[in-house]
Length: 385
Ligand code: GLT
Ligand code: MN
Ligand code: MN
Image 1 (tube, helix red, strand yellow):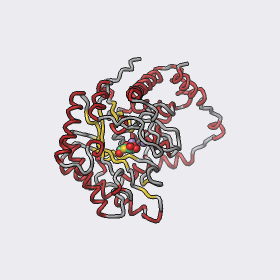
Image 2 (tube, protein in one colour):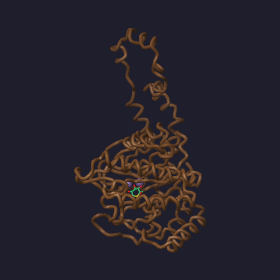
Image 3 (cartoon, rainbow, N blue to C red):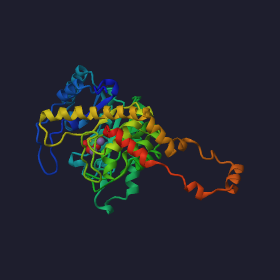
Image 4 (cartoon, helix red, strand yellow):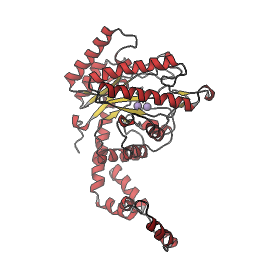
């Protein structure tokens, strides 16, 4: 098993996660903040292909044009030296108090316009750096007091904002797509567009939806108690998996952003197998952060671990496909039969024939689907038995 990360694997990291000093709502940072240029170089050395950033990660929101330029140039030099690409960029629309009531869905129209302006400026920077994937995570787009916002108005404003910004990307001719990232709650009590399913339905309503897809994150679907594997599958099925945030999470808790693959091994395995088989050629992006107990060495252990675990699962996916016992168990379960159309498109004669045919439900019900054996073989393979 070759577990060496290489650029062709398209591994990328959110710099805010790798450089995270370990603060949480109950305590201050436990590590010195990492310099982003240095982090970029180290990630390149470890075999990463890309990095991503928020505008505020690189320069403060009130930076002068010169300060912005200097900060961007420093990061660009590091990326160039490291042979690392900027695989994604995004706008911080959640840290500054101006966004406490939301950004695109803030009740104050001036806040909404400032949020759009901040996004437009950073889209320009992303365009300049050749970034293909621009991410929108809802952050503060939500509410605690339900009466404070009619969710239908909020969705109107959200749609207006995304359509406007997507219009700008087309107008400027940037070869860029948007990936919207759902999350059910945190930091808000309820976040608008809480899951991949909600997001896909929302994207369908956009005028510029052709360049808008989803950015599912493992932790966020699991916070809602959902299967990440199924969320990713539906996004792929809809042709809307534009980006993916890989990490790990104990279900139904606060957003843990753990090292990829460190929890939920079976769901993660099926997700990796799906990605590898689907032809998805976007970034394998780790939006995760090292445990708070780590010292600076632990940060690189964490980064290595994310990529190593992905490659282990990818190798296991190949072994799954080549395993004769598993193939036989898949047949016994009837898995290939699900790919066969049931009746095809509506046809009057076919409907009549189908309606009037004889069926024997008792006989149909007598079949076993041998799922126990199939699943045990999966477990054997994953545990190396
Ligand atoms: C933030 C959030 C992530 C998002 C990032 C993009 S920032 O840390 O928890 O899931 O992907 O804004
Ligand atoms: Mn994320
Ligand atoms: Mn998260």
